[in-house]
Amino acid sequence: MSFFGKNIKKIRSIKGLSQQAFAELFDLKRGTLGAYEEGRSEPKIETLIRIANYFSIAIDSLLTSELTVNELLKFKGDLTTYAEDIKKERFASIPCITENNVNEYVSLYNNEAFIKELPDLQLPINLTKEFRGFTVNNLEMSSHDKGFYPKDIVIGEKVPASVIKKLNNGTLVFVIVEEKIIFRRLYITKGKAVLRADHKSIEDEEYDLSDIQEMWRVRYVFCRRIPEFGDHLEDKLLFIEEELKKMKDRL
Image (cartoon, rainbow, N blue to C red):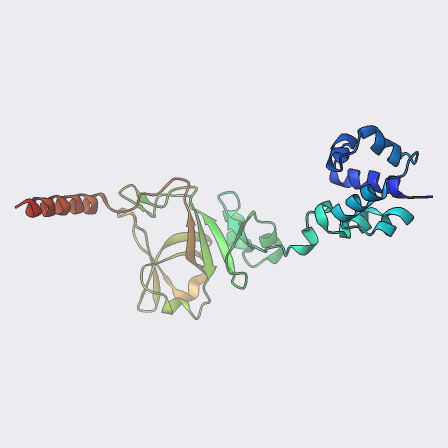
């Protein structure tokens, strides 16, 4: 007894092919394929070879044993999507601090179980480093319609306490200090951390370095709007310079 009919029916099921679609692949009539599947007819040797070659299945396996789904998925050819041969790319999973969880975060930032429950972003960045996302929730880092606005997201790399003093003045950071999270620019002055906003009406905040519980150096930024590039004044000066050059060339 040949298992050919059962096997091609199973192949159709895995591929999601109708009898008509499968039959057309091999220049068969739908009724002929139906007869194969019901065991009322056996294929010609040419048809058998074409089907076996197309799905890279040994002819004797196709005829003499009922193939399982797992066995069929191991075959190459058009039968599979080559999922087993593709190395899945891993993105870094970055927990995010949002308006909804920020109050809990300042209390539970050291709790691994809590961190795992935070919403996360998947990004193609260094998997060996620790990152945290932070959703901007005020206008402290905006200036003259530029900078950061609520709902923008910044991604920070964790800064060890021993490295904080080595950061350049003006580095963008967000820190946990005195049960709150502050997103500003860092300046180290006389052993203290000065956190300065870009908005001119916001006063600096100053803390002892030992008071900082966590610090994240901003590495990546995601804005909800397309940011303006360049300065309007600079653009105007450049335009004037180009016009003066054209006038000079005409003389």
